[in-house]
Image 1: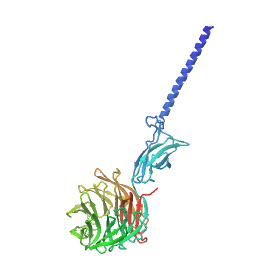
Image 2: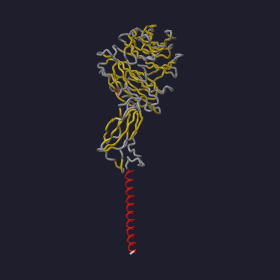
Image 3: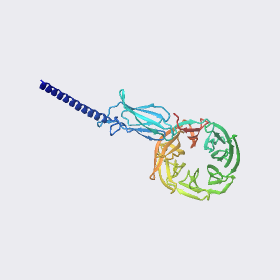
Image 4: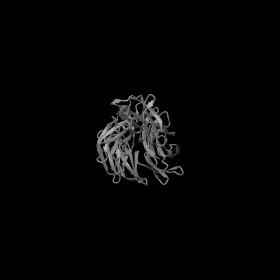
Length: 479
């Protein structure tokens, strides 16, 4: 009897042991299978390859845009089936909002609805049916400044030809009107506040400031004079201090200091650089040079003046103290529209419109021509008139170059490029063209850049038959 009970008990224990062993083995197999399957999932944080972030989401900042790139999630070496991607965005102090739904076949997206100096965050997820993956997030990232919003300045001018900016705390703008013999004054909000009566047909001007007083030096092309005006900022009064006849038509000016002002002047057969001191007297004798329609640029590091020619293949370096002249022949230069210096001070950019339109790049240190960049977007239909150069310090992409051009139909447009030199090889990347809605333009004069109150602006001066106002500004759009 006991033997039977003992055998029966042994039999049951054996069966229990087999069941338990089987259950344990099955459980182990389930865990192994489940674990392998789970970790192979590219969205599993324990996945050794993806760490749960299969998109490899990355960003790159550009001028006025941020580009996102990612990779399609893979499973067992094959693309995971999804319907589309969804991107969210927020600013530093904002909340997440849907930016865009992107095709499943895409692997990049460019966000142009950004403002410089604001940091942004992005997150990406894959969507299939009613299911969505976890987010992959990136940030903060900010973009480089780029103006793309054109506004007309409400100013009744007939022929605005030149603009200058006050270095005072008020940062007023001075616009010379060649037709009305007047310099109009705008505040930092570009609202008209005052004016100065000047000589006949002002062509160029500069402004400097001393103790709440702006001094305006004007080149009056029509009566061959240069004039100095004083404007007290606290009272808004503008008065003429001095005027002298220089015997030639002044057309460009640059100031090294208050007591050293260089004026480029031209006549029927005489072209010269005149130096005016703080007592408004012509300093030394006029410097005779050969080019016509000059552009002047000051190189503070070398204390030299660069004279750019509109009708020759030479530029001239003038030592500001000794007034010695050093000519330099530049192959390919025949009609220089304007010039600018790179943000690192190494390169001189010269916009040439003698055909084809291109940018010449000169090494300032060695005074040698590095090369030139053809700008097909311009020269096929447009004539380059003026250049605005926007330095972008410590930007790996390069510097911004804006060129104001006009075509045979009287349409004025602004062309924007990224310019840089790598290993002495110049490169240009075309960004975009902005057409100015100002019909029947007969003259395009100037495009100039200013930074004031941490707000960057480009000013464009035009003249046409229909509208009396020809002043515009190009600013960064505000979202």
